[in-house]
Image (tube, one colour):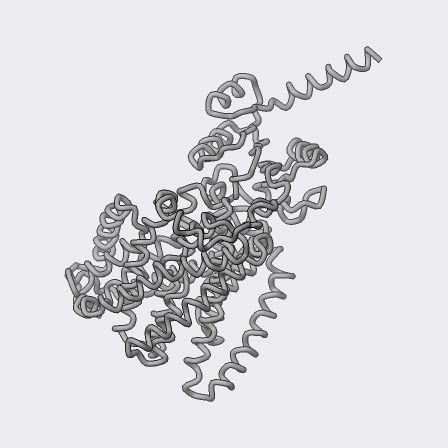
Amino acid sequence: MATSVFPDIFTEMAVLLLLAAAVGAIGVRLRQPLIVSFIVVGIVAGPSVLGLVSANDQIDLLAKFGITLLLFVVGLKLDLHIIRTMGPVALATGLGQVIFTSVVGYLIAIWMGMTPITALYVAIALTFSSTIIIVKLLSDKREVDTLHGRIALGFLIVQDLIVVLVMIGLNALGQADDMPISLAALAVLFKGILFLLGVVLVTRYILPHLLTLFASSQELLVLFGIAWAVSLAMLGDTLGFSKEVGAFVAGVSLASTPYRDALGARLVSLRDFLLLFFFIDLGAGLDLGLLGAQIPEAVIFSLFVLIGNPLIVMVIMGVLGYRKRTGFLAGLTVAQISEFSLILAALGLSLGHISVETMGLITLVGLITISVSTYLIIFSHPIYLHLAPWLTLFERKHPYRESNGDIEPKGSDREIILFGLGRYGAGIAQALRERGYRVQSVDYNPELTRSDDDGGHPVLYGDAEDPEFIASLSLYRVKWVISTARERHVNQSLIHTLKDLGYRGQIAVTADSAVEAERLQRAGADLVMVPYADAAGEAVERLLQQEKS
């Protein structure tokens, strides 16, 4: 361990966190993702500049926890429904972009004089786009549920699945030093089948009971989620798949449960905090002298990612019949490399497949492409207006995909989210479904989320007071958000969160009295239901109708 300029590790960590907060604030003002800011913190705090980092073991441990949670949340949010609803475009753009970027990237790297194994790592690193950055930027622009946003999410899921397969392949390659690569691949395949079979059995027969038990407390549920992620990461590493693959499988095993959104929402902040240490560790290991010598190569690769990736996406989407605007906006989302690219490069460095210089080159490409693509996505619409006349080449004469009803799923404009599935809420849900509405019920009671509701519809586990959970819901096409909770602070929090998220639909909440109803209407509710008063009025109406008959 290097000699520290601080009296103890705690003081060193405190200074690093203060430095990260300061640089992060500057990055936010410049509209840059925190990934860029944190790598810069590592470079500044590392031996090349200030030499503040000495607690390498502690930072490395926190970085491993951050990567584990990153893959766990990716698996947790793996929504195959998006791929199914987007149809061929998600698979075609995802696979097409991966194949194009990896093949051309490999040829460019070979042309630059790199060895085949180094060129392979560089090509793979150029292939993947940052899910964290794209989702964050699209969410800020309220474009997650637009057509190009849903297409982008679709091919990001394809990329995430390929990342996991690549990690398994690289680990098999790393084990091939002691045996032929074919035997190493067969060994990994055999252990992988056993691993997945064991996880499936646990998920089918044990996890539902454990989740119901732990869900009685949200804090306990989050603790169990972290323990499950770390445990499978450890098991995956022991079996030779890497911690990342084990953590991803842990997330996938919970992705079909009603607790996934609540878990994912609670873990995002912790994931981002722990990833800080991975990027600090990464930046601290970079030599500014080496980075300076690699600028020409980094610029060439960066231009390839910034221009080539969007072009191939536009070509594929144009062939599939989408308009040039949709193809352009979706294509801009892949104009950067991913945090996974840096994780894969770090894995290659640990396996001895690539050098520190190659790691620095990939990181430099990441800094350039992430920084530039952020502005491209933020200003995507003005950029499109300037380039539109030259983009007709990427559009069919009749872009049938956006003229025959494929833009939005049928019935999506009649969706309602209902918080609270007690007797009152269950009655509302049933009545709305009888009138043709699609109702997604959410409840905080784990016993209700353990199985479907009375009508056989799945119930999500979640809290109306949790802003992160509400933000994880797809609100773009939701017509009503209804809360049957009687607590005023719960409804006020829900109204405030929906307004902050830019929700454009209507909000209905419940109150116990006319006074509370008036307060909630002033807070922004479009409709306030007073159960006892409403029921009394309905009873009077029925009496009057009976009297007339």
